[in-house]
Structures are given as C-alpha cells and as structure tokens.
Image 1 (cartoon, rainbow, N blue to C red):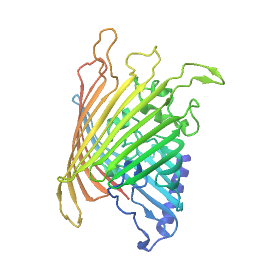
Image 2 (cartoon, rainbow, N blue to C red):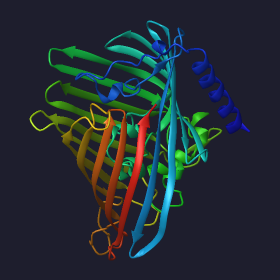
Image 3 (tube, one colour):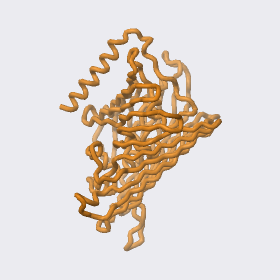
Image 4 (spheres, rainbow, N blue to C red):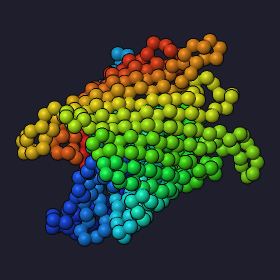
Length: 408
C-alpha cells in the first residue's frame, strides 16, 4: 500500500504542475553548468521545470535498455529492462533555505527508494548546513550518478558492487566552496547512520559494503549508536580539471546491547580519489575513480572474506561528429571506452604465501548519440573476466546493450 500511496501523491503533483501552467513560458529550465561546477554541485546541477509561479521545481530522468549476455558460452537470451525512473522535487523556501529530494523507481516499482531528501541552509559560499537523507560523498560517482550524464548503460562495478552506489543515510553536516581566480576549493563533512554487520554476513560470501543497502532500518536508527563520518575535499582549476579526496569510516558491528558488551568494536575505513578533466584541444573527457577499503574482520572468519579491497574505473569519452541531423541542431556522436578492475580480496594465503584472487576486470567500448545534451542513445559492449579467490580459470562474459536515457 505504501508504494501505491507514493505513486498517487507523485501523480497528483505532476498533474497539478501540468494543468496549472498552460502557458509554456512558465517552463523555464535552470542555466547550463559552467566550468566552476563540481561533483559537490550534482544534486542541484540538473534540469528543472518551475511549477507555475510557486517555489516548487520538478524534474527527473529515465533509463531503458536491452541486455544480451553470454557467460562461458551460455546465454539466457535477450531481455528488455526499464532500469529506473527518478523524480526530482525541490523548492526554494527562502533565498537561503532550499529543499531537494530524489525518488527512484527501479525495475518498474520493484524498488522505490528516497535517495536524497535534505534541507539546506545556505549561509555563505564557504559554510552551509544540510540535514536529512544525504548521499555519502565517497568518490565522485556516488553523488554524480544520473544516467543521462554518462555514455555507458551500466554503472561502474567499483561504484556499485565494491562501493555501494547512491549510498545514502539520514544525517547532517556542512559543506561549502571557495573561489580564487581560476581555482575552486570545495568540501563536505557529514555524520550519518552507517553500516551494519551485513557487510560480512551476506549472500555473497565475501566482504561487501554494497550489501548494507538492503538494510532499510538505517533510515530510522543507527545499528550500533555510532555515527558514520564521510568527508571530502576537492579542488578544481577551470582549465585543468577536478581532483577529489574522500574518506568514509566508522564502527559497523553491534558491540553492545543495553549496556552489555557483546564484542569488540570493529571499524571500516574507505579512502577514495577521483579526477576528471576535458582536454581542450580534442575535447576528450577523462573521468577516473579509485577506492581502497579496510575492514576489521573477526579472526574466526573464513579466508574468502577480505579485510582489504580496492578497485576503480577510467572512462575516456571522445566526441567524433557534431552536425545538425533531422532537426537536432546540436547532435553529437561519441566514441568511448571504460576500463574497470576490482580486487575483492587483496593479500596472500598465510599457509602458502600464494596470491588471493577474487578479481574482476572489464573493458567496455561504447558508441553514443546525443540528439540534445540531456538525452543519450547508447550502444555498449562489455568484455569481462572474473576469477574466484583460489585463482581458478576465469569466467568469461560478453554483454551487448542498447539503451536510452534522458532527463525530462
């Protein structure tokens, strides 16, 4: 019933927006991003439609794709997938008070998630307060994840399976930016509810931070009473690019109950670095991110649970043809490639000093067409090799995908 109520409320809002503004001049979108925009700005750096003369803005995006994959010669055939539809609702309550929310519907209505819903008090460029459901700013993709911004249908493996993509929690914190000539310095710092023991007690039989996303109780209370800290510092030169350094850490296990000590406190620490730039001469966009995870494991845990993990990706996107086509004046074609690697268990076996594997490597070439900047039609091919922690011959997968993604 909860899902139905949410759908009815959203439909009512959208219907009111449409019928209350027959005059199309009221539909004004926000300006395009400039060279000073950073990943910290992703939550607001989206197209919105103003609802009449009210302070309410509405927007969103949708993603549809096909999948045809073969793993070691075995295929399940062709499938169509409505991967997600996301709605943005926000409003300016005062020149210094804003509210923004992001509601995502995955695979039809199989999952409905509030990924962001926060109230911002914007005191100054360098000091602002945010409270609500916030996206933990670890790396860059976790915040800047909107499908229409990317030339690839799948999100990076390191951002979805190693790190929990679009990982959000209830909490509060501060953020800000400082401008100095060609440089922009930005920071974020939040205390939120955090992880729980599902990161080492899950269906994957490995250390998995992404498994914690299944715990919906984190939006109601902390699993152990200890806040998770997430902080990021980023610097951008308007002509060079952006470099970000981020950290996320805290206690993940339930170590006491009603004052009784149950177990030692066990911590996790995540470090990430991200970088993006556009080469001026060729207009080539390069985006990269790498993360390192350290988890304090109980000594009784099996060897396949890794205490150290790392992984990341590099995207190279090259525009190759820009010309008006069938009425689209800024139509642009792109050739892209993504390289990914994840090591789920970094280290060696104590008994033999042999390397532990449990690794995934992927290369994904892509072709895409943007008839307008906010809409992309994508053709991707993924070639992936995955090895178990014993280092047995890898499972080889090939996946071809065709899909559409657009803001609306």
